[in-house]
Length: 583
Image (cartoon, rainbow, N blue to C red; front, side, top):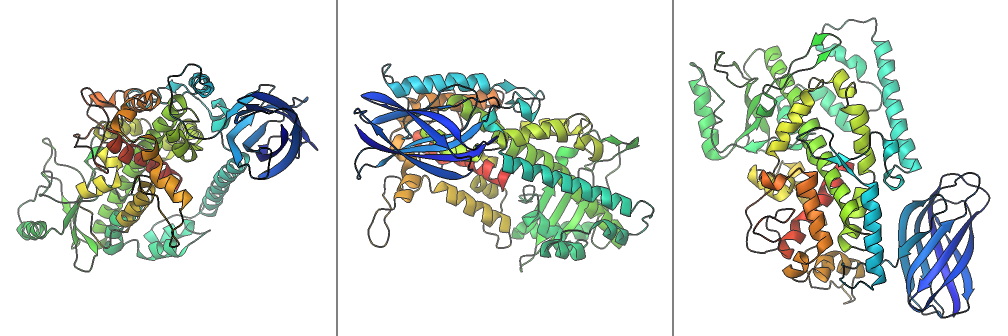
């Protein structure tokens, strides 16, 4: 009994009257009390209330919410509820919500402390998490967009998604205004150039106006230079294709008269300064037909040398792989006529765009991240510590992907209308890329090491990726050690971030014995990634348990997932994918 202080944080109201009535129940171990609150229609603010409760509720376990239903269903997005019990020294009890309240249903929010699943049938929290997952599995269902690709959320359009996975109003307005602004700029540039013919490369300047940046201006003036061409493989939009050469590629056929080139490549190879970018994945992909005109695709190979000062320069370009039915494909060299060499580099940039957009952006980032997002919603209740770690990174993933499937890569979508791999070629390419997907390629330290890009001063993407990975990896570093500041005081936020996995998974058998976590792993590999564990797509050879070693993201036949390796990679990959998706 006594006075309770209640804080209500509001994220948004769909519609807003002068006040909004909410019923709130405080549920403790020894009873419950019903309260009436009148909320102001303020967004992003917390309101405080004080109410007297005539009986002793005991430690609070849940709060329940029901929004008053008026003629118009004024949906309310509640961020969280905080409650302070009787007495000035009582600590606040936190009840996270972060979801919409609609209709007249009562929403039950458990106290926010993370808990693993228990086997006590009388545990009120266990009953809640089972009920929550049952409802989530009803709302978040799997669908197959295209055979041979990762499974997706069952939603044809963004309106079909569960309300809590939709863009918030500010995000939706920002996203749609950006689309409209881009479309308007395209129309204006089309009108501006409608009556002019282009006969020189400089005529492209007619469409490069509007918002500019220092980097855009630099590229505008230097895009033909070999130095910028090589730099983009290290630090451009797609720094995922370049690798240090371990041998000369078998597809590189050197014709008679190019002995000097062969000797140069051998010298660079022996000194470790020879690099390659191979786009063979595009070989044989059917090209699109746009407005009745056949499009074309190249599958080039670029050999580059790293100069002592850190510049990466192209040495030779082969536009297509050799074919038994055709003579050896021509090689393009920096000594060729300037326009021929420039056109060869343009074809490389075109191929780079295709792989970047489809393999490394759409598949490796968006689609794999969606598998993790759906599996998280279906398998991990809000009380699970891994859910609490991942949920901030899942925000908006399902809607942005659903919009892409309905507008960008759909039949008649933007890819079909404007991109060489549209018209079905993009699906062929995605299937090829899916067949080559490995789990270690999603881990920057492993991927960069495999491609021989560690320790290169001019590889700025590699440095940034490792720094981001390290920031995320602090979740698992120094496990068991409670960080302190210079004054010897405990740093609570670091203690939580660095110790969370060890706090809950202090032994491997705890990981193996967590049914929700194991269901999450299986849902990712066996369902979302279409039995990937049977196709050796996302597997690495298991090492002795150690922090930072390679792992499989789900349990495999004959091998249980050790807690230390599971914690050090699976969550890192999940968070990293969402970080680069939204960054």
